[in-house]
Length: 126
Image 1 (cartoon, rainbow, N blue to C red):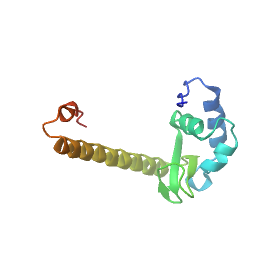
Image 2: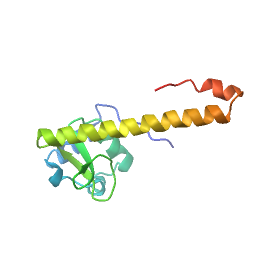
Image 3: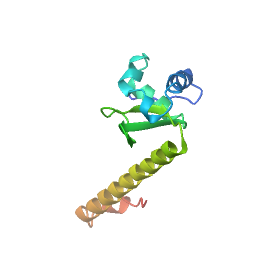
Image 4: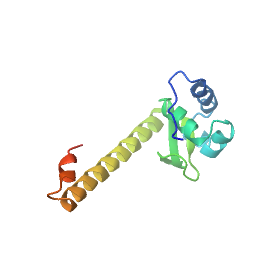
């Protein structure tokens, strides 16, 4: 059964926000596995709740911002402007990488399917 995204009014969002708000600063982050263990709704619902809380930052590893679920990673509320800047810069880096992969995939399949109607359907340009 596919996961259904949380409604913005779902009480889980406020419950997750309350827990993470006690983890101020990257060095005080809470690991994803710890957060998931606190709620019966499971990992996907927790990640969805996190995504609906713009004040929550995530870390991949100590000192490296971005990513969710990596060893040493976790969630926190930024304690200063530098943590906010680092988080936003890394998010833009992830977006840029994703766009590059989408464009590369489109080019690959357009070339592979040249002359095929499937190539004509690949018109999304980012």
